[in-house]
Image (cartoon, rainbow over all chains, first blue to last red; front, side, top):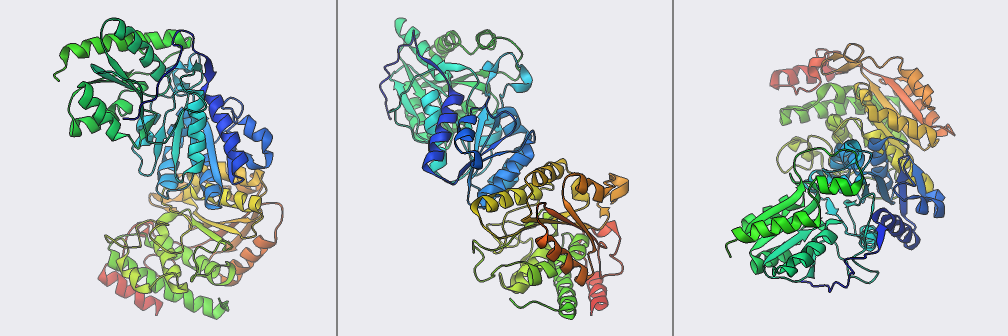
Length: 325
Length: 272
């Protein structure tokens, strides 16, 4: 298992926007490769593509409020030799253009990159219509598609650069709010390679996105009560790092998965698919339980929907009592 | 590739109709009516208009063709085989397991295809993207896209129409096979698309209307399109669904049906 020592000040983390990491990554990818182009859908500055647009105006195409056409034009641009980045709020990107992603992008295996902003309940006041909670499920079931949910600013930037440098469709999911920075410029990142941020022996908490930080906080709390929790940053949902997950299950005999996404079909489901076949241990999941979000400030919503470190601590204690090593 | 004169085009289209009917008979299923309405246009396009090289299907400078109405794959396969992209013997494998000829076009299986299609309404966006990329790359190839008139009930067609007009993509030429029928009946009864020409004009396209079975008009239409600057061109080709076979013509029942042995024999006798 790949272990990265975590030197994070959990009490006073630096907070940064993951969407800014995406925007910076896209800009840097654009500097490196002139074939990279970006497509807008009227929310260019909100999804931080304005940095690319201002630097390379001739390589930015606004398609207006037309997600299906945006995806089709991106497909066409890729056929002309470009590497198009399509950025939009996740609900509209993954949902509204799903058939275009399936039949035009994935079936033809075109080199189209998808940046899905506003993932998760923490989108906040805009409410259920704009809180993307289903993209992991509906993207990971598509052949040829890869799905990455980076944990912080730097990881989102690195995921964006990695997407630009590898062939094929990929969906990168990031959020709206500032979230704790838990990696740095030099932390290794590889698509499909999960890593351990904290070793442990009683339980493994496997998380993605901003929930990795919550999991680290939970592990710290649990250690005070004598429970040794491993924390894994599983930033790539597809292709899933089966080896790391199986190793964690073998070592701890109990898994808690944590994601800011519907439980049905999400990261937790993907992990259960592997473990049920390869290493059946007790697995419990934190996520959105078959309901839509609502308006509110992000922190209140995370509490109301059970997505805090406290919820992780409680579930770990529950699972430890039930595990059968 | 040598261009064909009007007589040769007519003879070629007749042979391609025979090829389509045989192909569909062997497949036992597939879309006959639209394949027959579109084949005259494809005959002109692949023989006299498009720059392409069947010996070098990936040639970067080739003109592109996107079959947005992917269900008329038999027409496209007939012409691709005829101009030399693959062995015409393959045509008998249409829709069979393991075939290079899928029920709807798969760019990774059939030589000569620029993209996979089959979910209606998506081709014009793809063509728009290629045209936009070509202009950005300073490539001079042209992009062609064929749609059905019923297909334009899809909203995405009009999103793409708006974008191509907005970006003034005069390297893009779309053609609508206006056979006026769809599965449930007449297009005007199912969901009226009229006034059709006015719609394209309103979306800032150059509009050309032709008889889609008149080879001279088809060729002239494409030439005029390539000479027009500042706007994309749409060719509205008035056609007859099932064209060339009396009992198939103007009959929506032949949209998604293949001929049986007897029907094939009658159809072939009408064409010979």
